[in-house]
Image (tube, rainbow, N blue to C red; front, side, top):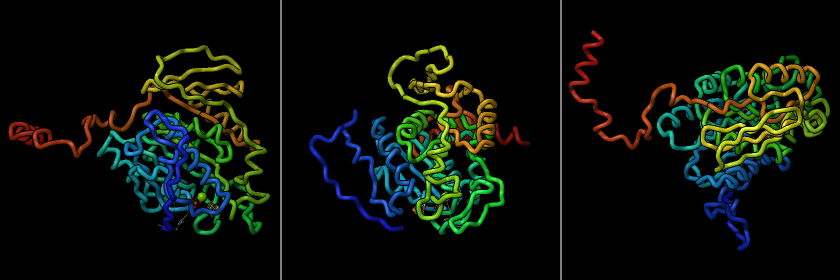
Length: 351
Ligand SMILES: Cc1ncc(C[n+]2csc(CCOP(=O)(O)OP(=O)(O)O)c2C)c(N)n1
Ligand code: SF4
Ligand SMILES: [Mg+2]
């Protein structure tokens, strides 16, 4: 993989967060993606989110698969842990890492090919098991890295750059994430930083399986007329159901929820997701309602964006498995060896 280090030139007046870091401290190497690629905007949104939340870079583990999208962790959070896995295998590698060390924040970055084609089984099981992670799919409807074949998220009837029509039905990862039990589900657009940054911040604070599908145009192979993942198409068909703000470090506030009003959803870590409702018929805490709204608007060719579902009382895999509270590498012999009496009892129970 090409690696171009970024020179560190700092202005004295650069804004600093609560840890004293500048946003430059959350950047990575220079991107080698095509100029105008939507994926670079998502990297910028991740940098801003981590800076705004004053996350310690060494507390983040970023993992990916293979693809232009999966190259991007090189371009943000340069001081964080990183692992670039095999095509479609990010979720299982991340699950293993998360089980070994529950103290890190896990950020999985993937592509629509990586997650909806070769890695669909991996995606499904990470969601259904409730792995506490932020799972971002940078969705351009094509295999960008291998030069523009339709991916499994390409809409039926959409056209390739050469004019070939896609005859297969699309997989909607947002619908799947909802059905499989993800407790924070959102869709956004790489060209809408104002919407995307709060969604990523909310996901980083969520503490359960958080999935964000970001439509991210591929300027080289899927930004033409006839594509439903182009900048023009998404701008013209984007239906934002809500706007999100994150409020940290305050006691939970509850508010009534009416059409066009505001609702505060407390998360397990005490942060508050403040949702400003844009669409009168949208209810973000009802899984079934979210699925219905998605399908209704999809049939009209609209791309529904915003926080589509959230469960403030999210659980994760550690809770389901009753795992130890400390990272495995900190367990000493006393915790790891149960002693001969416990072993004898275990053996007896199996006879
Ligand atoms: C096991 C395996 N099969 C196939 C490939 C070839 N390959 C590399 S990237 C890719 C698709 C990437 O598409 P996507 O995940 O959508 O990422 P994008 O480049 O569009 O961001 C494929 C099929 C591979 N590297 N490894
Ligand atoms: S080929 Fe497409 S996805 Fe890959 S870097 Fe270029 S614009 Fe981005
Ligand atoms: Mg892709």
